[in-house]
Image (tube, rainbow over all chains, first blue to last red; front, side, top):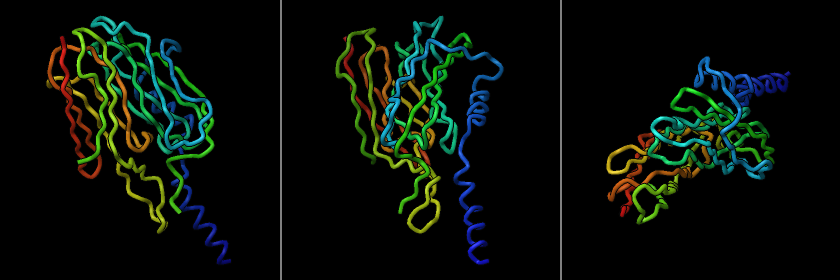
Length: 145
Length: 106
């Protein structure tokens, strides 16, 4: 009986931590950025290794095909994930001063999942690219033991 | 003062697009991990990163816990005039770090 209580307690305490972002929460987070605007594929290149051994540091580069002039530039680059505890990865703000719409960083991935990059242009258009990544050692939620 | 590593060209020609890389030492603790005592380690991340060229903002980025420890950022900017590029990181627990590099534009 005591063991059952313990297991039940364990399930309760572990669940809120394990509750991860899902494809639905990612879609909701993307919706917060894009609103009702259509998100079209193309113009965005998401450079991320397809097979990652260590999810603690995954190199990622987002490149957007844009002239980066006052008339037409990339305003923001947003990156989202499916299965980390939270769907957000980063938001970068750009301007014509950047010359090239390229942002690189290193991210954590908690599981094999899809990563989505969305570019917002000065004209209010949204373009996206996604990549599936397989992760052998997960990050973010592993405990220190 | 946190350890910062910035890679930017020392000289550039006006109008040239240059790449800037910035790395800072920071644990980027997610707030989702339990420590040896079984308790959740409180979140401690850098939230904002900004770069300015002679006081004018050239790049800004908002981090989430999904950014790897020792956050690395690379971006491009058009060389405008001689001066300093300043970087600023701010985050949880009152974290503030600043760094400057000089650049000569001809």
